[in-house]
Image 1 (cartoon, rainbow, N blue to C red):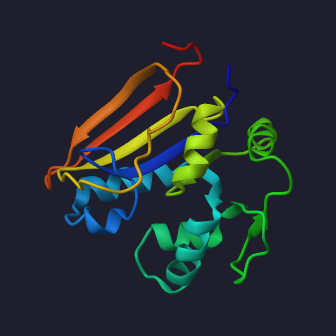
Image 2: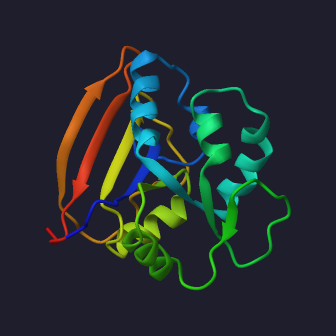
Length: 184
């Protein structure tokens, strides 16, 4: 059982489960999506990123004025799963030393707010498969992408409990699941 600190994975998906390049299929935005995103990050004081996401985000977010996420991501403690040194520095960033799953388990046992896992498909898959993720929050776009990396491919069977579901005015389905520790 998890104490107060949770690992919360958030991903944008197309209706057919594609998570790669969400900027190509999340084309509508609205106040409901803004409110959902603000509520998500309000509880987080740490973020886990994969190397690819870090490299993309370090190019965009430090100069962004998209709020409240820009202030959040630029100030929050960021932990990056990578085996090679980072090419660009970004405030409050630490490279994960050692095994990703063990690092996240240890981080979850420390005092603090929720730990966010944003955008990083392979990191999310690894942590979901290892049973380290407590909640899976999805913003599902009303689009069939057709091709691209899918978030849930290759994962073991697991049971999810619906916490919340909302449809935004632009047709995005926002769903939050608690991940059961018992396999289906």
